[in-house]
Amino acid sequence: MKKSKEPINRISMAIAMLFISLAIHAQRFVNTSLEGAQSVCAITQDSDGMIWLGTDNGLYSYDGYHGYRHFQEHAFSNTRVNALGFEGRMLYLATGNGILKFDTQSYQYAETPAMKLLPMRRSASS
Image 1: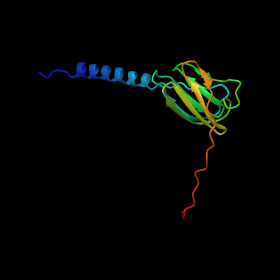
Image 2: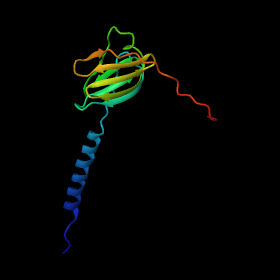
Image 3: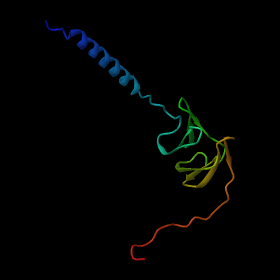
Image 4: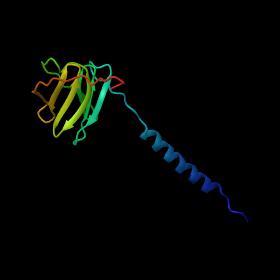
């Protein structure tokens, strides 16, 4: 007498459905907008897990739930941030108007010494 494979097939199907439902849930994506920003130009993450975003409208941070704009009555803080880099707790922002320093613990912009930057263009023959 042959044993029926129907119970094994049902158990296998139930396990497969369980794994499929877990995979679908794990791929959920939520789009978060940043008020006032149209595009993100630079992204970095600090040692605490905070994500820092350089946008076309200044600096933002994202804690995994909400985006925060770091606006200050400072001429540079509202401009496009092209690049970001950390040194300790200080976040350096490269803008079209110069370099800014932002303290990620006090959430304040710090003074940066003025430096004259020279163009890095060279001709192909030199």
